[in-house]
Image 1 (cartoon, helix red, strand yellow):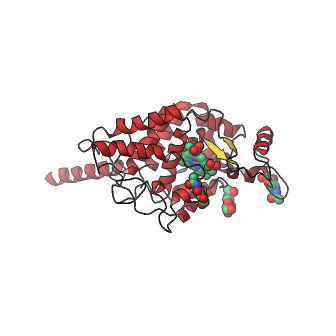
Image 2 (cartoon, rainbow, N blue to C red):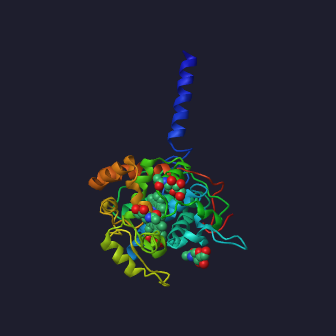
Image 3 (cartoon, rainbow, N blue to C red):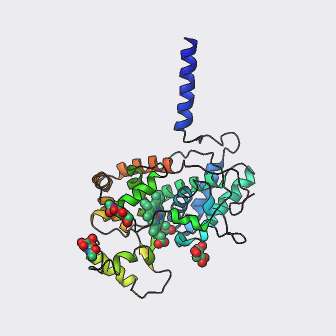
Length: 317
Ligand code: HEM
Ligand SMILES: *[C@@H]1O[C@H](CO)[C@@H](O)[C@H](O)[C@H]1NC(C)=O
Ligand SMILES: *[C@@H]1O[C@H](CO)[C@@H](O)[C@H](O)[C@H]1NC(C)=O
Ligand SMILES: *[C@@H]1O[C@H](CO)[C@@H](O)[C@H](O)[C@H]1NC(C)=O
């Protein structure tokens, strides 16, 4: 009897620890920094009021962080000496708004110095960004630590926009994420901007027989060729990923069905029956999408990896 209750208690404890996401918890700063969340929200709100592209930037920054070395704020570190950091690596063109995290960190350090990790601040900021863009809210598990390593060469580990469905599946499963997570998290592309380099493969020299990817809607293909001519040198040219690119909604999934999504990776979500069914489900229900997105965000943002609580998000202690 005593043994049974002890065994039961132990299994309850083990279950709670696992389900809290690798030791993370919602009330992690309850005693040490109770006001951290409104302070981060305030910094994000201020930035979004002046620049509607900030939510996209923060969401992508968090994704990028979590996919390399876990969510350990490695994406925030500056290059130093001859170490080129992630943020200066090749797929960095869309990383911006680092100042928002700096401002939030400064405000948090002013009330609870040395307590809240940059990785947690980024996870909170990404959630706030989604909310401020009109998307769902959720409780962010906290307790991540910041890493001490950031290498530009490791950004090749990010999934590429040219990936097909098997390559995407592999990239996500290496991080414990399923096909359900892949479809839900790809919905992040309801926000933001893409440069020509990210979809050039579909509109010029697609393959030996087709100049343009035949799975791309002809009217969009024509518009994209206009923005991104073959010999285009303008580094900043590109287009929003979704006509409502500052609003977090389920338009992204409708665009995929209309053959109007930008990346090969987006349209490849139609290539497995399971992922195709989810694209159709999310295209017809913002609620179903929001629910799935929240659960997959919590999963992705619970991939941990760091060791310390940085004082300055751009440099190791
Ligand atoms: C499934 C694999 C993914 C691929 C291949 C991919 C690829 C890309 C690419 C190529 C860009 C445009 C970069 C540029 O040209 O500037 C982009 C932008 C973006 N991605 Fe993804 N991404 C993926 C998953 C995600 C996930 C999981 C999220 C977040 C949940 C996300 C959020 C965003 C956002 C918000 C932008 C716009 C950034 C901005 O406007 O500043 N992506 N992605
Ligand atoms: C992106 O990387 C390139 C080359 O790797 C670098 O020259 C550039 O400064 C980086 N851009 C940003 C915004 O960090
Ligand atoms: C995806 O691409 C890889 C590598 O190019 C290839 O081996 C694989 O067969 C492709 N899978 C699908 C479903 O197209
Ligand atoms: C080019 O792509 C189209 C559409 O995917 C395909 O039907 C065609 O066979 C491809 N051509 C070559 C030479 O691979």
